[in-house]
Image (cartoon, rainbow, N blue to C red):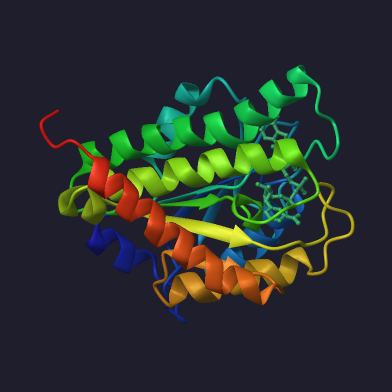
Length: 250
Ligand SMILES: NC(=O)c1ccc[n+]([C@@H]2O[C@H](COP(=O)([O-])OP(=O)(O)OC[C@H]3O[C@@H](n4cnc5c(N)ncnc54)[C@H](OP(=O)(O)O)[C@@H]3O)[C@@H](O)[C@H]2O)c1
């Protein structure tokens, strides 16, 4: 949203999220729903992107529902063009299911569809130019670097996590100005995906918004102190490694 228009949308309380158009995938899930609630309370206009039949609109949910399917990300182009921020949050956890079809499904949903959405939003941000900067938040997991008692989940989350780190290395200053990429690295919270998580989705959503408000690109919310130490080190090591091997002549 251009700056003048954004100012016109500000609620009397003002605030960073006020008037922002924010799309969230997996919006019917625990964290997706909690993020919708918190962001609406802060004055954002939330578009819930769901792969299931949308429920009726409420004051706590998105202002609008859009139905989409993994594998058909390009059909979201018109919707994404309207957004200031895209939160890629959908995911599945196959637990101990190691069947090859399950591996395909987890890679497709958790990693490849997220990657395609990121690329699509990047191309939109490039067309918009610097006057209308956008953000994309990608919800990976601390399973990116820690065991999550679910090998296929870990594999798919490591893939998307590494793809995001790689993209971070390759992008130049102009691209970074047009599209900011933030990574959400979350510990266990209760949801259909993880019924025994320690934290609540509401607490995690509040923390995510708080840290985003502090301008952090690497947002970590977990009870595990090791993740706060290891994740930034992993991120730095990946970036240095990719930067060292990146060929500029292509
Ligand atoms: N719970 C945890 O402990 C934990 C920890 C770290 C990271 N995370 C990550 O946080 C995100 C949200 O998870 P959650 O715990 O809130 O789980 P959840 O309640 O199960 O929500 C996940 C949502 O993903 C969407 N989804 C599922 N299958 C899909 C498909 N085939 N295509 C498109 N969307 C699909 C669904 O939302 P719609 O029906 O609206 O499409 C579903 O409600 C996930 O990426 C997860 O990996 C979770």
